[in-house]
Length: 253
Image (cartoon, rainbow, N blue to C red):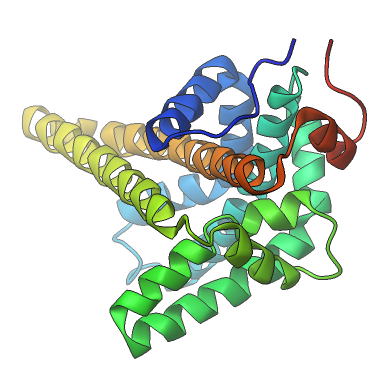
């Protein structure tokens, strides 16, 4: 039996499902985050402890580039892991990373172009920028899962899938933003208290915050992968057989 049922999901069910996936597949999903974002996280900690980006501009630029690459890879790999879990299979770290790498060119082009368009729309007016941002909320999932001629084809496809559901995408993004702010505030509070008690503990709190933020990347990918499947089920009667055909193989019995 498949671990998860492909069916229309309410907003709360998407969020609950993402947390359930994180709990059930924690080892694989956290492993993906560590492999993809571990080095940028270590560099960020080092830069922070060495005076910040103004004191270490070269390393700061390297960290940003590695983080950009890692964010794309972690999303592609997490999409694969979530899809395997939907089919009742056991996601594997190596397989998920290889899948993410194989789709990286599509993910890269889709992410860069959609991000550029969001910036343009935001410069023109804030509201259109938000609409465009929500319209491209599943562009990486499309780029990672669907057969495309180029990554930019994912933009039109994501826009079509989110038609009529951009408000739902907006709510999911708001929750995601609240979560990252909460993690940052929690880490800052712990760091501040630790530094007050013993200044030598400040690096420990910085590392703790970095670990907490590593959990955010796969959780965000889980949320919008479930949203992607929710949209396809609602609009295209997407089922496990169709998912298995996309990924190869068959659903687990």
